[in-house]
Figure (cartoon, rainbow, N blue to C red):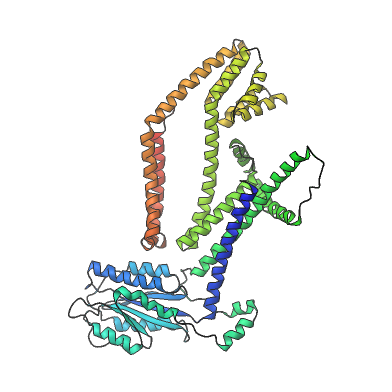
Length: 555
């Protein structure tokens, strides 16, 4: 990736961080400038609703909740013959939606409405006397006689009437007595517009607070009230902004380092053909170099402390990458933090999104490196018969083995030319040529190359026609390659089935998470769901390993 491409990606991440931070700041300022607003949904769960009618009632409640402004807190109380406080007014809208969708049906009457109204007033009293609060009742008033207790909180009503004992007029009188509004089930979302119309003018104390320093205003602003196990949206936005900003800084630093090395290399090549010029960098580039050096230095010290720098350097070398181990780790950290920010925002909880994103980023970088190594080794194995044929022809023409290898280096393709050049270079500085070729076989993990080196050692010990030996070896390699391709074609159906069986649960889960997030939320917000999710992951891994063992045929 070029320096310009690094810069574009870094700019995009910086813009993402700025947008997230701006959204979080706007949300925080809106919450500070306006009084707190909340609504308590009273959901009738009596069993006079049929399955289709109950689903329609829950859909109406969800549409109303989705139409509310983001700063409005929402709570849920279910009632039939009695009432239950499911959740107090909170900003975690997805939690309330999930609670509505999973509310169980019980009881055969709606007589618990009076107690539910009292509980709603008590729950919203914690927001303070200046809070703007309302109540929404969704009910068919099954066997509800008399009148519900008059509430001091404005009560909106969405009413149904299925049978003669459904007291719908009582619900309408409740809304009229409290200054609430009434809407048909199909138009329930329009009731949320009352909050959008509320734009209280700033009081004198708010105007004075706006003129104070930002630190004082922040200290004076009250924290939002919510259950201790919920994270509000502004917290998620802040976490996402911090992660995206950190990733952008790391990416800029890494990009500056890569582009700096590339620029110095190009400048050195150009300098060979022209007068020497100053290589001093501008102040901005020098600053970027310091940032890049600091970030990469921290990663390099961490790798040295763990003793993994040499192993990672060898893997990068086998993969044909010129990047340093510390730079590869920095790039992996950048990818991990971006994935963690995205999954945190999607999942709605940092406890799931952050660990999953960091783990996915590390696994992706490791997988990409392994794929690169596998492809390079496969290309070397495909080129080896032609390379040995070229060496045998050179030997028959009167060249020595070293001269024949030099022909491969000059005329062969990559990666074979680079590997034989390494072996030839080691032999020129004193290493035994057979030992250098053994190193190539170990790096490329090539059994065919090991056999070829064994043939060279035997020929050196007992003599003989090395060109003829190499030709026989090449014939064996090509027969084995033909058999390997034949087995691969026969096992293609099994491999395709394995890919589909592994990918299908992931794709189906992703689609359900996109289309029915409230349905999938139970998997990672409840203990039983987490157990099921972990169990499914373990079983999928075991199944993938088992299918891999079945379709892998050694030739």
